[in-house]
Length: 221
Image (cartoon, rainbow, N blue to C red; front, side, top):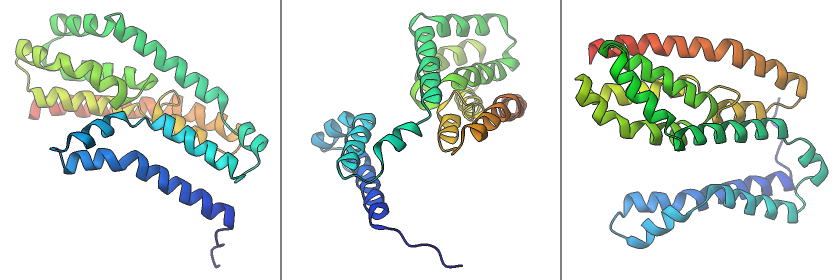
């Protein structure tokens, strides 16, 4: 069966998406390629992905590429509000020093060979409600050098265990990966079924397997 060809509005939408990706990525890529150019460094750090997305969504609205009311009605507002609230909770915990206190407790009370597994689980819990790169890594990475020095563990192992643990729960419906999947579901019934499966089946299995892997990793590196 021959694939259906893009219509005029679909072509324009695809073009807008491509242009938005170029705007978001061009200056960070130029910053990496030409690190000596101060202009690229400044512009690369000033690009706000959310603002660019809103701007291009407004352009699409002005171009009448889709029915406005229908598009707004299909936005998964419950999922968006849930993710924002969970992310704020983690941000408050980080600002309040909860993560630092937890790290100190783990380093003092958990046997050294279990520390990588403990940090893997901490990373998984944080990533369950937030972004790995945006929240988990900036919050936990600064703690690693001191912890490695006090426990004698390999620094690279601790970094790897945190990232692996965080990624193991990134499929959570409260996190960025899972929310993107839920947001792409067409119907509310499908979204609810997928939500329960991700929350009760996928995430526990993924976190458990990752913790076991990190336990083995701690003894091999």
